Image (cartoon, rainbow over all chains, first blue to last red; front, side):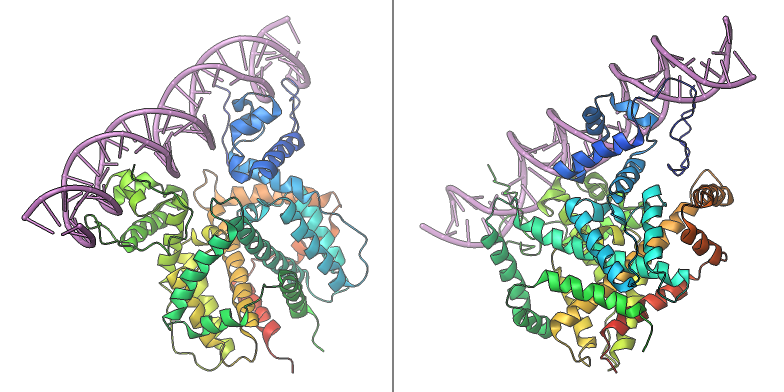
Length: 237
Length: 237
DNA sequence: AGCGCACTACGTACGGTGTACGTAACTACG
DNA sequence: CGTAGTTACGTACACCGTACGTAGTGCGCT
């Protein structure tokens, strides 16, 4: 009758250690690290309670002492890799600093390709997320704007970076690990798209694809996107 | 030895009807509609092959004649609701038109709250997505820019709208359907956040929360975000 | 006309999932 | 010191995606 109390709390609010029973064998950081290791190696779908428990070397159900629901495990994972954000002394040039933040976020998501999928569903302010946000706000000190506006800037930058990496990964993933060769794959897609476009129903799409015949410079796309976001918040003048 | 040929093709490339065997009992639209109905009522997690099949009134495995993998079912769903986009004759004012597009996207995601979760993982250009894109490009005809730039505009607008609705839904979802009362929930969160902030480690976060004491006007946040995106693409002057 | 094949339909079965629940060992607090 | 609250973990259940086999159906070819 231990009253596991499946109250849907925020996991960060529940203390990691309540000095009553036996010492917990693992820390939240341990568990998060194990889950991250699995996700990095085998993708997010490989992250199951059994799998993580096995990686830790404990029984499956023991995990539930630390993590009330799997969703919370996800939160732990996001927080863990958020800790990889390198924080620096703000330079005084908020645009340069935020640019650097954007690049770091992108690198982070490239390193942990499951991150974009999880970012959309996370509510809470995890410890590392707080540190990250505080750092962004510090970088934005030179910008004359309300904190509300600064938060909007950070949110918008994150949205753009996340979407960018999602697209990047989606196209990259598609070219890999298919029984078809890459050329055949793209050929099939081109054929389909070409067929649709050739109906004449989508003249502008046709023009767009004709225009972008060569390979797209994704790096340049990213830089432009970041620049545009920052421009939108720069004081007019 | 029917060679079900689980080739990872694009579902839109495979013809809906190959005039050989018995007539299919359902169309893709039927299936998509059933799945959408289920997702609207019970959330995305309620969408299972068995469930959708039951809703259609057929055996579970019959579904696999129409949809090779569940992921493709998702694509069908996204395409189906994309068809709800109302298209109009471009007004000549591209900013106004894109603003309207943004509002429509937001309404669509509010109506189908599972959409944001799926949007991140969809690669292909479904029929309705093509129509939608073509319409956006038509609205952008007055804007003097390359099609590449216009595509970037649409992508960015979508990213921002999606992220906005995700946040909106996340906060809305949290206040609902918990054994706790809403007041208690927010109290717990405030207590946690307040505790973190009170450590003094996050002075700017503290200031930000102090500043935004009142309820946030989400509508205004959305308008500002859209405006900023569009401003970023307006010709300098 | 009639054969054959590609297609539909669907039941069964397998390996996986999240997690509720019960039991046993353990430790800090009253 | 007892006892309450915690950790540890095995078992069990409902559900998932889907591979596979079988039976029936009707178009296309000879």
